[in-house]
Image 1 (spheres, one colour):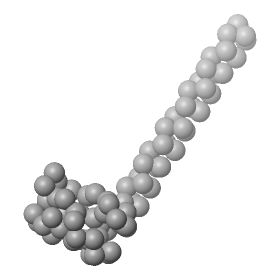
Image 2 (tube, helix red, strand yellow):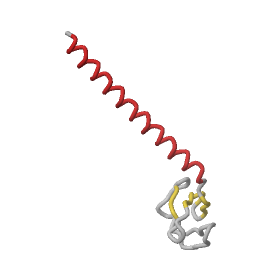
Image 3 (cartoon, helix red, strand yellow):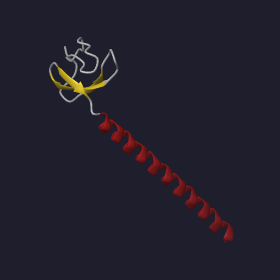
Length: 83
């Protein structure tokens, strides 16, 4: 068992996790990372924010691709009408 460095809750079960895994403190909800069998520290929140931003960038790129497909379809319809 490990102790949360944020709230001092000392009954965090770590047996189901491996080193480097992240999880939340059951008492305060703070994100923690397992360093060793019974040692945890607060997870670096900046890294998590960067991951979220990367996901948003990918979603925006996907939306742009959809717009291009619609433009291609419209061009094809216009060509058919011209003939």
